[in-house]
Image 1 (cartoon, rainbow, N blue to C red):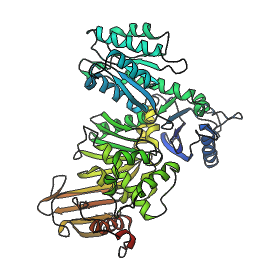
Image 2 (image 1 turned 135 degrees about the horizontal axis):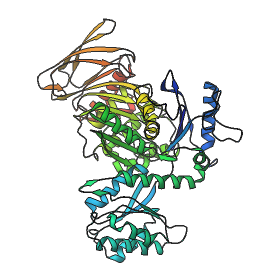
Image 3 (image 1 turned 135 degrees about the vertical axis):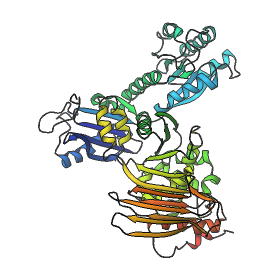
Image 4 (image 1 turned 90 degrees about the vertical axis):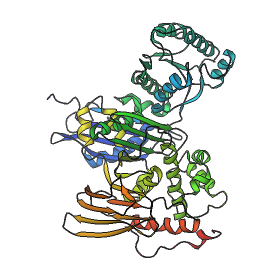
Length: 578
């Protein structure tokens, strides 16, 4: 086996609120995560320089590891020198900053326009308008649509290689006229990924006015071929970020270029799906953006919303989802304007934490509603087949309660059967995905090592039963030999703590009419984690009167957080309920 090209790797991810830095290095012949740090992102005023925040983080990591990262001029040293100075490779990813604006130009909305939409999604590019043969517009109407949309990039797709050229040539002529009427300094880049026989024509028609990116046809013999177009979009994304003042110093030192965080997360979702030969769902809920990525048989489908988050975009998420949908996850009637006020405060101070349990429940309700809405847009999602859920984003780390995280996921996704849940506490998924093309050995070793944290196992009961009646009989044997026997009632959740380094043998028998993953009897050996094992036998019990909801939601919260003693409901919460 040849020696790896790189030994030490520094990865930095710049989010809307936080910047994370990770140091990977070889220890006893294997790559390991040896240090990590986080701090506030500094791409906005007053500093407007991502390296300021990164430098503060690396200073702390340097004190902890003894490794020096910067030279006297403040530039990251690469490659690594003697005495633990510098690193061999510095990679940078980001989800920070405003989305880029795109106009999609193609032939048919269900084919070429839809493919272009999927291609641009991981690059935080919003399709603000589209022009195609079924848009009902005249040529002048399409011209006005393109110009008034003020795109930063125009993506042109459509047509089969060697097929008809006339209609696509008309679209190219339309784009040429639109960019000629756009003022200097505001002209968009153009990506052409349509009928390859027109690629030369596209360059000749447009290159004297705008930057033209050429990629192979996004439609290849009846199937989508997104990768070449996405490679071109990656170069475009990097060039845009390099021109941004906030990323200029970081970009000069970066070996990878500035990579959009979503793209390598897709890469790792597909990796884990291939590795397990099972469906894997990755959920990244951020302050400004939310991403769900589903891996199935090595392929990946993602839904990304640049206007939906739980911090900067909380108000937009509330408006999009609606107060009624969020309110169904609250154990109280929200006061008039309370949800809007919460979202406004969260948007102004996205790093703030809830001051009381009322705000905490609003935060949980918003999280549930956001994930549920996004999951509804994943056409290939089969909740019965998902065996692993990987969660990312600061909100899942805020509670430090793994069982609570699993309960929130059970609500948001309506999962079935036995689901393993892992978290990405260090933000390593993006780093590993970006590293895959550089040092795949490191990715394999790190993915099987210490970068992901085991949250635990979620067992979701399906079927119908009267609340309060027996749903399951559970017998759990710990590694120590201790045996716990428990009867779980319909309408309840039961949390069994299991330490990270431990396992538990479970024997479960469900009553008639109930099952876990279609089975009434199960024998499982499950590994431990931060949340241990959570058995969810609520069976849709949240569809109830407000009084019952208040009682039950607080009881469930107590069960998953280890609260002992009677559950007290604030009197004000029940004021005015039926």
